[in-house]
Length: 215
Image (spheres, rainbow, N blue to C red):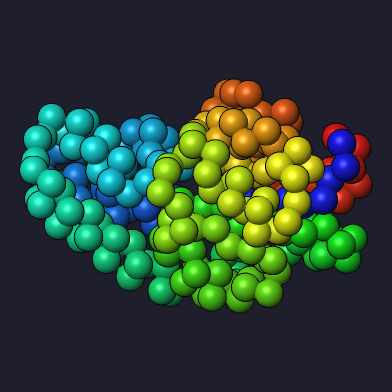
């Protein structure tokens, strides 16, 4: 395989925004009278905002119409945004900056492939805009992971064949999306949570360009 590009999910791969999503969903669930746990939160990883809300309501045994759901989703997002507006580059996960630097030096293209519509704000807060040649986020795609749209659009913007792209993902739905796109997928996290990934790493502290090339 000739590796020409790396496409990164954002939440849980570049930075841990999952904790802020969790806090916002947990507060919303509490207001509706039920407990939302970290175990429940695993089901929301890599899933769009409205689909996440549907899961939350299912857990609480609550049925709402579309207008009510839209208001709740907006309330949750406002809380989440209030958290991420306070983020700084210190929150970039260990080893990420070194790995991105090695990719740039080697001429390997990079992109973000995330369901989050807040991706531009997060990249701005982390001062990472210049490290990515393309950003595909929830504002540019119609289909949620495991649909491969986000990664296929990333490959297209980078002008790289899907088969020459490596995806870094921390969610099962994202791994499935990468495989559906015909790409190699490296899972970031625990192997039991990332079935189907070609390789699973704990993070970027001990993963370098040479490890990528030895896939």
